[in-house]
Image (tube, rainbow, N blue to C red; front, side):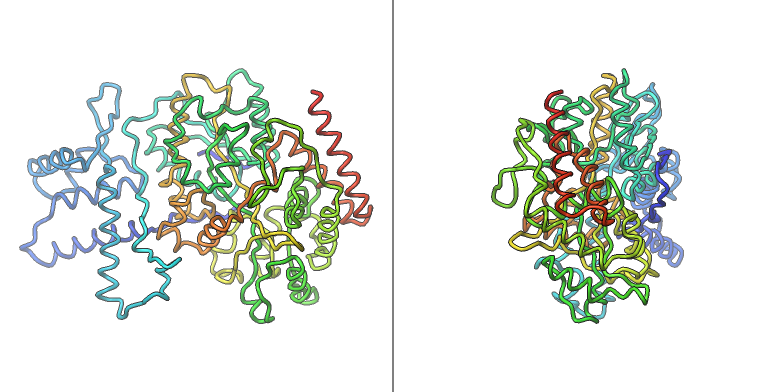
Length: 582
């Protein structure tokens, strides 16, 4: 998608995943070749051969024409033509016009064919396991989770092409963050172009540059982008500044199946009761920890901040080049996020939000009237916790941010690391990493009297408020495709470790891809996924920056914890007051 990544960090890009359905497709293809070659009495099955060719083309993003499909049948032209017409009449093949005259068509597997193929793939796998597996794996098999088997769960079918190509000048233009999930989308450019029927161009920036470009784009007469990625805390600011269109103004939200999204991720896309984006990646910040190191040291997975500090102290061996924990401590945005999440660990949001069952209420933020809550007793406990954490961190911790904290963890130099799930590919895709297969996933350990939370991060995809009217319909259709369950499953199969939908998290192939999905689903059901730690008010980016500056001075020993809290509180109060005056 012509990605232009605006940061120096290289992101791990997974190769094209060989999913179960694709593997079975290759097997049937080869098996048919063997049968037809070994036994002269067996003639080519035109229906099967054409179905296989259609599916191969769909998965490989290659255009299939009537001529190529007939050729793939391995039967005479007239016979193949009749078989192809029969498949069209039976609803197995969809035709999409390739030209304005409508006389030339490309051929694609229909939703019916894709669904039947997925069902057949699953059945064939179970038959093969029954015949050649050698034993009944039983309930302890990796094929079971939460008391139910993978084979009983519903598998999400592959993406299918739109019935009509999107007709939009210059194709669909997308502005995103340069992280592993959006880079997976870029790698799948050809497949998505085939699905929507037009070109896709994508620009990718670092988090701060992405926000600057989105705000700059809103000042233009006409948007340069059809779809933009928006970090969850920006929703309030972007809604008030008319950066984004409210989605209910341009589409039927029921098409998105809102109930399928993780509750915290879907609620975080709203401001003033209206949705301004569709969750594209819901990626909570978790505690990654080395199960093997914990087992060797006789440590339990930490559920409290005291237990976390004990584990960090125990596993901190700087003379051997190993450190207890890594976290976001670089000055500014990175450390600011840590401060907000650490406040949440001690049971306090950054704003005076009303407490409700399961957390804090953010539904009325658009009405205003809130104030910052930094200089408090909970704030002091959070500040002192960070100072103690500093003792068991790498020597370069005060310059560590999003990627820097994960790389040494993947390399085996760190026993624990706070990190978003989207960063898991750094150690989940490389078997040479010491952390590969040895990582456990936990919500943030909680301070005294507080509950564990997994602060929700990630991005929604929205439509710019200044998008040219003639492009809106195509943008809505593309947005629906990019955030669909089928697309989300495809991202996972190609290396993404984020997922905003319940249906995707319960898909058998997704479950097998990583244990992170089962862990996150469990946190969601336990109501540990929360977005109140970073409430999406218009001033939140400024508050994050303030905390990231004042607490950095504290960590450097320039000011005391109480002074850091006081200065951050005063600056945040002034920021909110100035914003209200405007």
